[in-house]
Length: 101
Image (cartoon, rainbow, N blue to C red; front, side, top):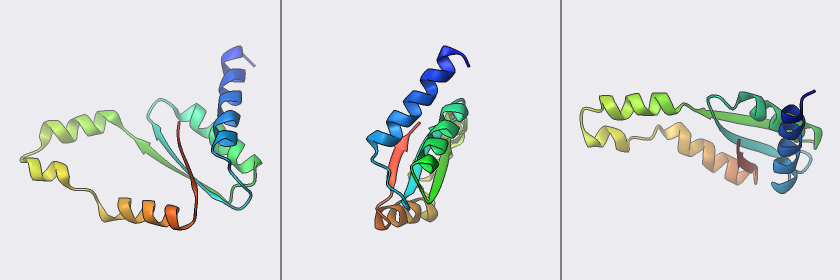
């Protein structure tokens, strides 16, 4: 195992510890394309602490760029799919832990 891999594992454990993940909790992780490895390490650390489920949402900055570049009017950029807010409300109701990778 390289030093970078070792540090990435420790960083993931620190993130989960800092988020105070408790047994049976939901964990929501927002990550970015290119950070899959650290995201998986966070999930592994969360499950090791007893998380019930780790929900990962990947944000693709290149797709966001395409949305902005191809917008036909400003109102289309205001649109947020209803399931995005429903997801956040459910995670809040469940007192989940949220973090970014």
